[in-house]
Amino acid sequence: MTMLGYPLKSSVMFLAIFLLGGVLTTHLVGMLGDKYGYKKVMPVLYAMSAVLVSLLSFQMSTFLFYTLLFLAGCAVTLVQSMTLAAAPDFYPIAFRGTAMGWGSAVSRLGSAVAPTVVGVLLTANIPVRGVFLTFIIPALIACIAILLTKKDPNLAG
Image (cartoon, rainbow, N blue to C red):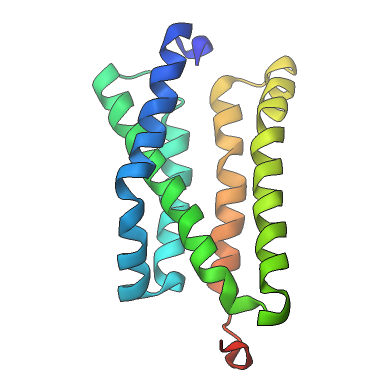
């Protein structure tokens, strides 16, 4: 973010606003999922995540940046919550807990590895906007994957 002209001291505020977006709107995911189902809600949230995060790579007014950051926090957190809510539809109850644990572990691993990947890309002289655009890839893959899923009727309970 400093490469985009934002002061280093703003990083705590950036994180707080991003997380606040998720905290203040997570309750919506249950209502959205119950009303429309995960197959309709999750692709929209993944697409929103991709667009909003990529928009953060552009220089803009502080107010607009904070607004987009808040909305990106909403989209990213909501789709993560929806993923946890939808996952049981894909695993038999006998190992559903293990599957959820592995999914959570892989998610945490991605969070841990992402800063290193960003550092490597920046060291390789990839422009900051190009680095931000790499965040679109997993969101689009997840969006397509959700659109291709089918609930197994044998996994009730």
